[in-house]
Image 1: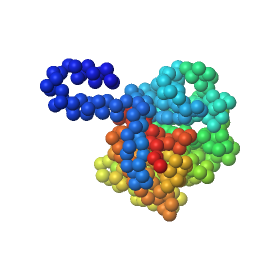
Image 2: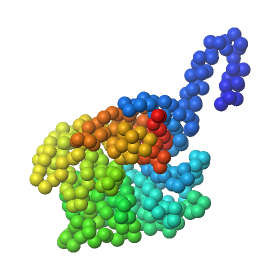
Image 3: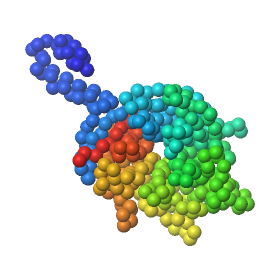
Image 4: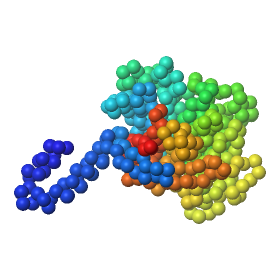
Length: 388
């Protein structure tokens, strides 16, 4: 950067340097702000934060996971998985499963197992091509090699039973519960009625063990015609999920035109899609029977108009106690991160909208209490650190 500045100054006449300098400073500051390691101070309702670009030059980043020692993983939807070490040097990891990169599908979420220091295992969600054509969401587990360069012993432990040729509504987040079971969110693949069909995985949240077997206490085990992996049903396209401080599962999902929802996900519960919704069809028509029906759950919170929610984190309060227990939900539509306070009934407290928050795909809390997010529009990873 210093060399570029000197070259630019030498390239102009001395009489014009004074007039040129303000423009040069603007160009220099713009370049610095776009470079990894540069932190800008931004304001929030709870006080200032620094926003630092951690990594750039990413093509449609989708999922983010932290590893011990300051390293992290990032997925790109086209099927690329990167390892970044503590010095932010990147390695493209080989051995990633082939993805069905169609429409909204591809390589999506990544999570490190709780026992990663011992097993080096990670979980990947992706759209998998079916032999009969089309594809569906799958969940795989693999070990990251000691040199962080390849995946070893990859096993597909779950995949949707019925393929679809459509390119919409794959889900998909994976969350490891405290008991070691895995929750996976699945969209209805653009076929709304399948969300109410227990013979299909579409529009469900499923729960499996790490070897792919079904926990015997799943709610539909033994029911004729039902898929035993199903934990909850009636979802449209849940793309965010997180555990709260008590280990309870929450999910955020896309509505249609309005009706994006946050739900407390309970065993065997039906969340209503497409029978009930607070949104309307894109062409303006009414969805189902209205906003309520006996036996179907009400959302903890909903947006109207839609914000197109994706990633979600429930903050620990480690660096900013005022945010303890708050939900942070990324928006793909309005380029912000929504902060919600669940105390006394959910309310949206503020929208964190910065120059960096372009089409936010994921948001996740780091071990040190900072909040990291993926900007799909900017092809970058950013870190938000509350300033004391």
